[in-house]
Length: 240
Ligand code: SF4
Image 1 (cartoon, helix red, strand yellow):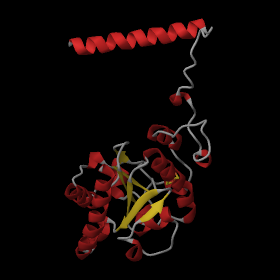
Image 2: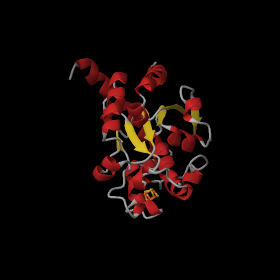
Image 3: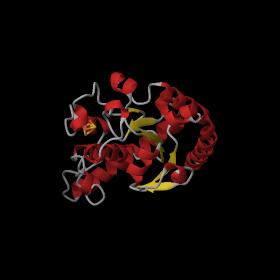
Image 4: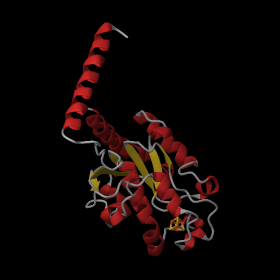
């Protein structure tokens, strides 16, 4: 160890020893360390803002609570629950609608043709799939890819909200009308929502088109590129 650091270390040790001797003279025989934050129980959704006696849930705890979920009728025909994948510390979270056939078979979000297009969009943004977190509003595949029913959404959305509370990303990108309308609680069509910053629980939200829509309507890629540029700018601002 260089002499300079050795001297600093000796001084620090001497200061700590002096402090402890002072405390002993005052009759203090133990120093309370305060509760271990990790030992606190996870907050329920309704106490997250107000309680300091609980901590944020982890994704693993939320997945464990979901278990072999039977909370709605979509459980009956699914092969796999598609919870979500990616970086638990991601600054960018992408939220789609619901698993399709490929996702249901593999248990992973966005793994079909639309998923490959999403990966290309992420690549242009400078991200790999592993850098971001990807999930859906609905965790089980609706039969024949029909729209989820109101009771199915009501049963599943709390898990998405818990995931987002655990992730606390800088930006959420919703993919398609269903994800945007559900998360933002609005009936506005995606054509009106996309390209305009919104907010969910204090987190910036950029709605854009779903990659599956882009496969059918390649001309809309131009608008998605405009949305993506806004997201990249916002993420860069967060760096500064
Ligand atoms: S869609 Fe959601 S609420 Fe319904 S069974 Fe699947 S995980 Fe449970």
